Image 1 (tube, rainbow, N blue to C red):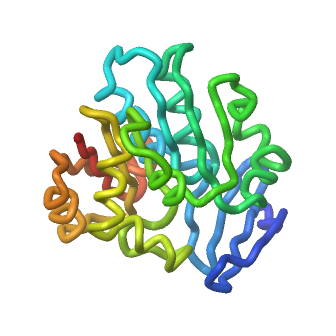
Image 2: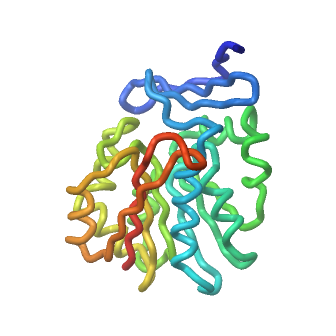
Length: 221
C-alpha cells in the first residue's frame, strides 16, 4: 500500500495541526490524530446539501450559505440540485483550505469553485450569519465535528441558544437550516426546538450503504 504524504498543514486557533494528506488518489484532512474527512467517504456531506435543497422545492433565486468548504462535497451536491438562478456563498475561515481546494485537491473539486453561482468568502460563518436578518433561504453548516466540536472552541457560539437564534433570524420565512455532526446530540436537538425550529434528525451513512453513521439535523423556520 502506498504511504500517506503530507501536502500541507496549518495550525488552528487552538494550536492543533490541520493537515492535508494524500495516498495515491485518496485525500484525507486530519486534525491532530483525528480524520475530519476522506475523499472516499462523501455520503453524509452530500446529504447535508440534498436534504436542504429538497426542502427549498422550486423557490426562485434561492440564496444558500454553506459554512465550511472542506473537500467540497456539500458544495458540489448543492450545485447539482440547485437551478441556474441560485447563489451559493461558502464561508471558509482558513485561507489554506481554499488554497488546497484550488491546488492539490483541484481534481476533487471538479471546477465547482469556478461555477458562476459560487462566491467564496474568507470569513467566520458566524459573522456572516449575524450580518443580516432574513437573508438566506438555506444555511448548511459543517465547520466542525458537531455541537461537541474539535477544530475551534469559538465554534461553540454557533451551537448555543444565542447562536441558533441568530441562525433562525438570518433565514427567510420557511428557510431551512441543516447541520452535520459525527454523532447524535439530544441537547442540541432541544436547543433547536427551543429557539423555534421544526426539527427532523436524519441518521446518514458516511459512504454508500457503509461507513460510520453520522447525524444531520434538518430544521425549518
